[in-house]
Image (tube, rainbow, N blue to C red; front, side):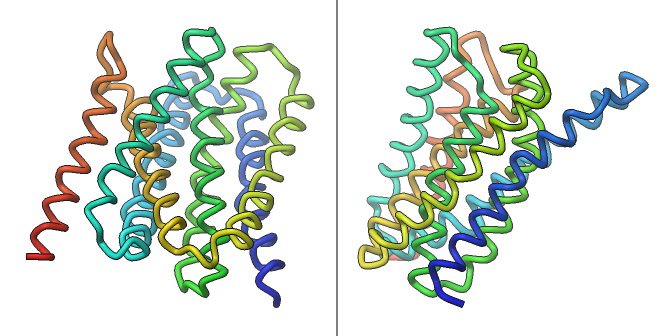
Length: 240
């Protein structure tokens, strides 16, 4: 199987979990109400766990290796967290805030680019990253569907069609990573680390809402910074 076909299949399979999650969410509400709430919170927590797993198991280790464990990994992760914060603030100020949809797209895009680059480099973790992307897209698609329905009042069919159209993001991003980053492993590593910072921000901002304050951007940014402090300490110790 050619690498291009592998990328298309892996990214498409991962992307199809977006409308699949929406389809599950489109079913009639579960009764009793407490069971629906438990199920929804389970999906949110499940998605957060997968996102954190993707960061710690694939994105950060592979990103660090691609950048030769340079201390530059720290500002790259911080830049990812800050960028996601800025995007969310801009959307919020314009009253277009849709955190679940935004989070799903923002982490799906760089991860798909990284997946394409990993396939180009014959990395053994490429299938694992594809699996993790798909698993996180499932609950994110579920929550994004509920969010879209409540925000704009679109019907079930139109919302699912819109979510299905998002699948194409994966192959397009994956192929761009394959063609443009296969000869630039350090850039590929930076993209993975950048995505890690953004994902960490989203976990503590939208998936762990109990950590919010009135100025709700401070705790998630603090989480990104805390992660970077721990990572920097580990890098300095291993290089000593």
